[in-house]
Length: 170
Ligand SMILES: CC(C)(COP(=O)(O)OP(=O)(O)OC[C@H]1O[C@@H](n2cnc3c(N)ncnc32)[C@H](O)[C@@H]1OP(=O)(O)O)[C@@H](O)C(=O)NCCC(=O)NCCS
Image 1 (cartoon, rainbow, N blue to C red):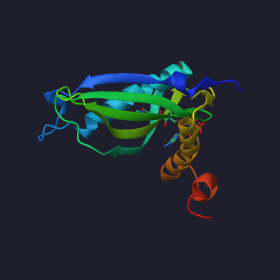
Image 2: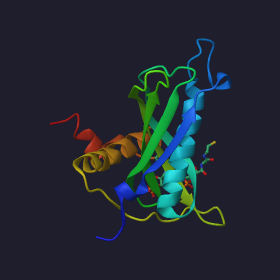
Image 3: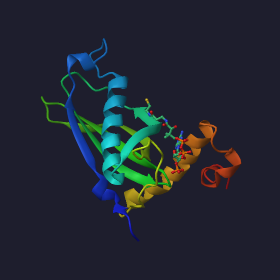
Image 4: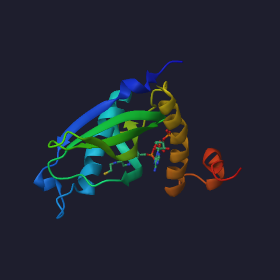
């Protein structure tokens, strides 16, 4: 099968939470994290398809843990699946205390990007090859997330989303 291996799409970014990034509780603002995830997602998707990409949708963002002022934040992004003209990037966020050295996963999100050509027209994405069990599981789940996203955007009828429906109907 021709395509790009999922592991080869890995993009990593590291930040430190500074006072301007925080809310009045001195925790990282959710909007700042969304911005960082959007940037690393676009870097990952752009490397994958060698095109300019735009964010088409954001799904499954969960803020499981607050991230404190001074924490080191690492974002890891990998393409989880490509479709015809879009791809999903799976982003994981880790926080690390510089005082204790303890690093824990605190967030994840899936962003969908679309590739554009020089005229701003949407273009085809390369194929993605999942190899590990985790990559395969994310690849399979990406189709259901895409169906849900398209339904919510009014671009797909619920009846057409067979894989998503199969989760609820046995
Ligand atoms: C994303 C965008 C290029 C799609 O344009 P379009 O004319 O609908 O293009 P298409 O119909 O060819 O769709 C392109 C792909 O986007 C996907 N897509 C569009 N909306 C989507 C959504 N809400 N969720 C998931 N995928 C979506 C389509 O399914 C298609 O992917 P596929 O071929 O792999 O199935 C266009 O809506 C756009 O430019 N949006 C603004 C992007 C932007 O500025 N982002 C930053 C926000 S500030």
